[in-house]
Image 1: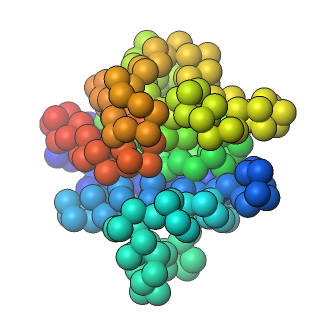
Image 2: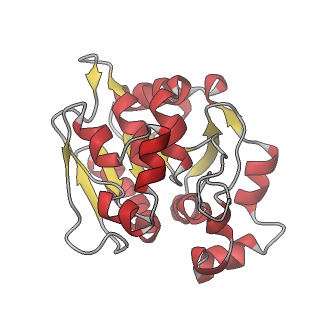
Length: 245
């Protein structure tokens, strides 16, 4: 199925995990800007957008909704009580098992460290992503969002859709700089590089620093490195959608 017959509708996947992670005791979860920027890109391009998590529940990464975690666009949106994404997350968040994948042409995995805790076992989101990819759609993810990609299968082969493809995501250096790698090891969760290479993908190291904007497209698989890459990753997903016509 080509993109001219695929729905102009995006399923944005978010994490259900909302546990404490940081040294200050604050929780991880959805990184606000990693859902907001893609949401805005897709809506501005004329796409409908729905949001789903594995359990139909969510919580925010607390550092993403304060201080340096908020860029001007995400700060303005966060402070707007009528922001449509905030309302959707509160009032119409879907449970993955209830999603009809045939309604979507793009699957987009938003990040936040919560993603590396629940995406690897998120069978409902995996099934939705697999169906969208199998129908000719695009699978995309940013920062820790690519933790969802190993579980998305190409129905034609039964293999992970990213096997043999190039994928990027948050770097090990970034985890070290944030002082979180030790906590991740203790919790037995893995870096994005470990997760994607384990299923036969090639991890692409970003050419700049771990917090510089960088995304990578390999066919109908699009990935980005960090919060600063959320917008460019969504834009690249739109290009991949259009180029598959």
